[in-house]
Length: 189
Ligand SMILES: [Zn+2]
Image (cartoon, rainbow, N blue to C red; front, side, top):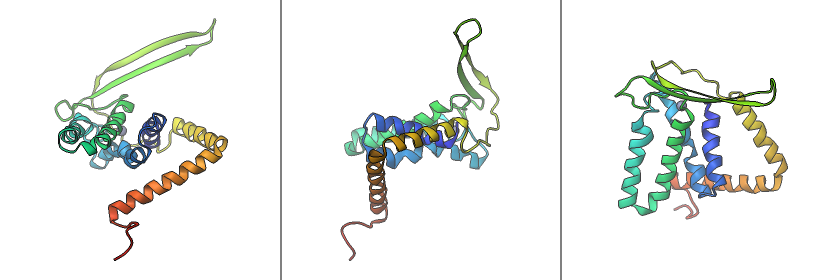
């Protein structure tokens, strides 16, 4: 799955569920974080294994639950984004790396045929195979382009709402950056 889809699908899901827009946008880049394992030549293993995708965020989640309740929603969103990456990549992920170096794959396919009436078929391929070099993926696949087109169409239809949403998005980013670097409305010294 290309990075654009990894970014946009879980973000759209959280926005549709009306989960805290500010945090949903702020943490969205985490949804593509696992793919940076390709920098280490261990794509679909190092960043996609249960340790970064499940164990680490769970530790943060538990810490938040018992020590920092005000972090809980953020921790949940972080876990959601990281887990979403693993789920969207289920066509081939070494989830138990480094314990099990092989890649698990789970590929459900729904086929549709109109020969002799509409017939739906369902195929499921799953199992384990050797870790494959999947380092080169297009930044925007066919599906990514389709999503982008759909997004552009929706923006055209909902121009007013889109303008307001973009303004909120921009303010959110500025606020988050401001908090990060200590700029802010407090004014200079
Ligand atoms: Zn990935």
